[in-house]
Image (cartoon, rainbow, N blue to C red):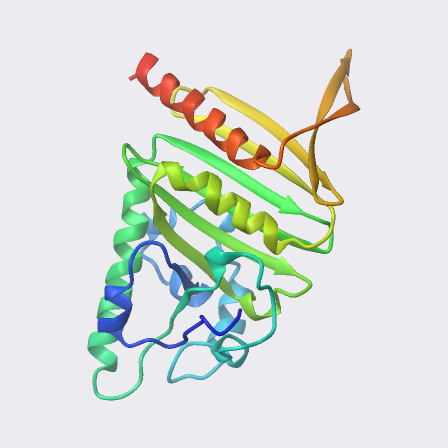
Length: 255
């Protein structure tokens, strides 16, 4: 995280941050959600109990680990979407109780909205050594993004998940920004599922900064990867736009 990062924000300031910011929420707070809300959280991103314990072992007053409190850690600078990250830690001082109530209410409201999910998109961008895992729940007019970063260079995000509300038309740009955080050659895997049980999977492969789409060849029960076709620089945005269009059509045809 670079100099745009702020940690342990006061409740009023956190509430005023626009939706273009990512909110970093510690695992302990997510694990502390009521059972009726925990059941709505994407299963593959639900923190483990040991992750929650590790997070809460930081500063007991702020609920934020020492690594996450650093304002300039020298990690990734390429992804504009992560430069304005707000750490949702418990504020200190006389307003701590009020701040905790506001932050808890924000997370509770965000999680409750998952109950209105119409479709879901999973995006995993990985080089093997570093990974960005984004789960997107599509509602009627908004997307709820839950992001986990792990691997080399993402150590300060250990024990945190980044949350954000965004418009569907912003998803392509956000995914491009995340791919810029992965500096090595990487594979982008996108899967989607609508409430009408329409599902699909797409792959993009980036080598030397150039995106390509591999072809999948089926031989009986075996699927192998065939030749790759080079794509334009906006391949990520085009893929996301096509996926969103497909899901929107599905929603119209199967209300």
